Length: 518
Ligand code: FAD
Ligand code: DLZ
Image (spheres, rainbow, N blue to C red):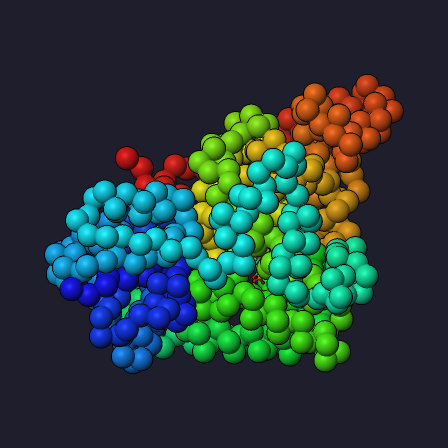
């Protein structure tokens, strides 16, 4: 009677807690390609390709290392197409004495796993996912009893816990956070060194053909699939990032350039989330770059903050606030997602470029997701469910545990301010300052309302006006109402009328893009 170790699609880590210390001749590893996982939302074609190809490569790597891997393919006739169904079938095949599994990232999957001890006639051990620096229990302990949860406080705890960028108990350089040095607008004609783009090998090409056949009508292009699917490829990508892009990462973290899809970002989130790269190892490498003087502190601290700060924080926040977070809608946003999020057909040059990159690469960088695509959804009052589904579908790095808190709480303020102290609402001024989008746009960033005015300008005041009751008392945003009140009545009405006229032009997305109908 062996030990059965199910490994989920985002647990592709050689040192996974469930494998650690196990004898190879006493263990059967179970990996499952599942229709349910590929279609519970209709993921971008590149995302399905990425997960399935990385799973197949990982299974091969495990077999080469001497493990027994029982691998169900999507096309296997008997496939039950759910985690629970496939584990049940594996129990029949192997009659294990114990199932040893690492907790799932997604709440939905974790709920299913927690039913296994009652469902199955064998012992089930559910292990904490220690690829994260803070466990669910530690986050809960930190969060319980606090009036407000803020990333910054949590991040400082993580710095102390890991010792990253710490010197005698104090932050290196004297400050915890160099966010103010992460906001340079792009220079004219700025481009960045290309990231490595691994060519699909035979395994990936087989998966691409499968995805074209089974999921050909899902969103997204598949002809430029260049994501790392093995640990080696992911490590190559990390090497190039540290050597060529980290030094500028901090300075231009918030910059946006038309047609420049990666800039100085690491493009490592897909590999980190799949488990191909260890987040702590990456942070240590970043720290070394600072110590070797190959990258400045604003870059290194910024990178480390994203990983041990934001990434860990949103994961803890997600588990702390699930399942309520999924249906939160504090601003009562009820408008359907506009069709152009799927088609890219909009005259707003910034939106069109971010959607193009999303479709071509299954990626957009952080500030595009937050301050362009997200900002629009916030200001236009798009239903959180629609926006959440969209983000979960379209990005190759999207899993519910990281997408949902970013979208519902950070972007849409649907949690009413549990995660962020204010909505990230901005007018065209911000986008114009931080990008080169506006100069060739049909809309004018400097025109406030009326024909040709940038919709971000009119929607901004429409948003502020309709949420005045809630936001006026917010100490970080409330002051803007004195600007609004100083405008004469006609001008305020012009803003609101222009916003309404624009909102009336939006065509709701057809049903069925994100979830199958029926
Ligand atoms: P870099 O800019 O190089 O950052 C380094 C790493 O920091 C990333 O690889 C990622 O692991 C981590 N990171 C940075 N910001 C965040 C954050 N806010 N939350 C969690 N991790 C972070 N990230 C995902 O991994 N999956 C998602 O589904 C996802 N959805 C998002 C939705 C919205 C609305 C927003 C605003 C952000 C979202 N992010 C998500 C965070 C961030 O945009 C991506 O992690 C980043 O763009 C990935 O590209 P990169 O690896 O080049 O990141
Ligand atoms: C995203 C995804 C897809 C498309 N397919 C699979 C799959 O076939 N098998 C699998 O184990 N995982 C898949 N995943 C990732 C799962 O959704 C992921 O394992 C959960 O997020 C676990 O929380």
